[in-house]
Length: 190
Ligand SMILES: Cc1cc2nc3c(=O)[nH]c(=O)nc-3n(C[C@H](O)[C@H](O)[C@H](O)COP(=O)(O)O)c2cc1C
Image 1: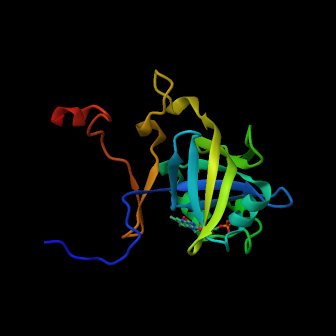
Image 2: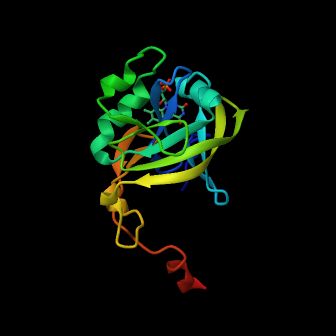
């Protein structure tokens, strides 16, 4: 028996994306974003749903660039901080975070040194839909710490140890064990 839960924002799990941008004076900001993900293969693109009231939204509109840092479980407290505090009210948000900010290599946006994986993006499209601005960013490069790479040069998800969100319980989680192989296991039913 299934029970209707109504129109809820339930996709499991949600990512924790740390979106970095510069304001009009070149001051860095980082914002926690759960409404986001990969939305296009070619060119490789990400989509973010950002509320117009976020400082990050006006930053990205002006600079036309942003970074997406993927925090690890060890960064849970600071990742949540970036979602609780706005640079509009707390101008020293970044200093208080204790994180180290560096300019990204390929776009006009800051990145956090401590995050082990960062996507560098330039804005391809911004459009309001409903309550949020939908931002599509083309990924121009991905920067990874050597320590999270496997022997083939790919990212090892267990070494990255990314944070996931349960949108119903409002809790942060870790990735579990590997249960199968993509484009392989389903072939058993072909
Ligand atoms: C787990 C989590 C997910 C969030 N997801 C989003 C989101 O997808 N879009 C959004 O506009 N705000 C989201 N927020 C809220 C912003 O991160 C928050 O308002 C932040 O303080 C904005 O910072 P800024 O004004 O300095 O950009 C989220 C917050 C948390 C804690």
